[in-house]
Amino acid sequence: MPPTTTPLTPYRLLGGPGSPYSLKMRALLRYRRLPHLWIVPRGYIGKGGELAAAGKGMIPVLQYPDGSYHADSTPLAVDLERRHPGQRSVLPADPAVALLSHLIEDMADELLVAAMFDLRWGSDIDRQFCATRQLAGWLGPVPKSDMDATVARFTHRQTQQRTKMVMADNHEGLMALYQDVLAVMEDMLQRTSYLFGERPALADFGLYGQLSQCAIDPSASAIMRARAPRTFQWTQSLDDACGVDGEWAPRDIWEPSVRRMLELVGRFHLPLLAANHAAVENAQAHFEAHFDGRHWRLPAQSYKHKCLVWLRREWQALPSDAQASIRGLLADTGCLDTLAAGTEPRLPVPAMAPL
Ligand SMILES: N[C@@H](CCC(=O)N[C@@H](CS)C(=O)NCC(=O)O)C(=O)O
Image 1 (cartoon, rainbow, N blue to C red):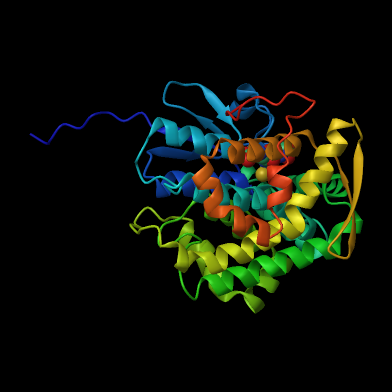
Image 2: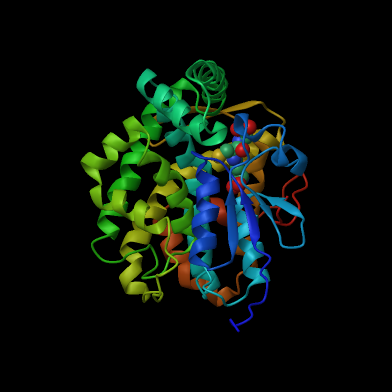
């Protein structure tokens, strides 16, 4: 008699090719060894199928074993920690260090994405390749004429989206951010495999989501291959880290690279989050900000308003000794003032939870 096995009800991750957040979630589920199926619903970017029925309006969507659908990768990652405590956690055990990891993840999710998107939809070569390969994943085999028509439709949609999300004025600043992130990654990879040691943290998965796409897209990939070959391989490796079994490093080992990454958070991300926050609170559609020698002009986004509130609440909730342990690092890197400006928002922001 063969041994009996307990039937497994896995998570179902509904995502798409080319979606940085989908691949971030898949890498996280693989690393955490949480049984799951990776599903790309067939059809034009999943419209009309199970994704439409799930009703989240975005990908990825994670179906829990009880059949319910949930979205939003950061709250999902935190919810998965609650559901599977102690199983290959991606949150450093020290809550102060976990906050540093969250800050870096937030920069990747909310700002580095704009650099990726800017390059992906910013030239003919990128548009043609990226649209075709993504739709090949969504549609499966289709005749060339159908593919060409759908590529044209998707390219139009994404190019419009780029105009709203990136806005032409910000190209130089976003390229500076992308190249600086790559430089910090290359430096980090001289000492550790991940930002906080030999096991990946939430910060690594956020960076992985965006950088995994930059490794593929023609223009972004050319920059990465020329300047950051170790980071290129890092994206290939973190795609499936289910066999990685490492430890968090002591602070003196991780601090140099985390400090450099936090300098980018303080230089680019938090000033933009703060300006966005004020714009959302004042019901403005756009905002302008001057920092780092550049003029930024971006649409105000209510989701980013929540992100800053969640980060501030996380700082406020730290015990005072935990705050003290990172106060100097946050101050040196230009992060403290925005993070510790702890006024509650005028617009209500719910506690972080998956949608
Ligand atoms: N905060 C969300 C963002 C997800 C997101 O923006 N996903 C993109 C694709 S990568 C999307 O679904 N955009 C809506 C669209 O293209 O219609 C997360 O972390 O999961």
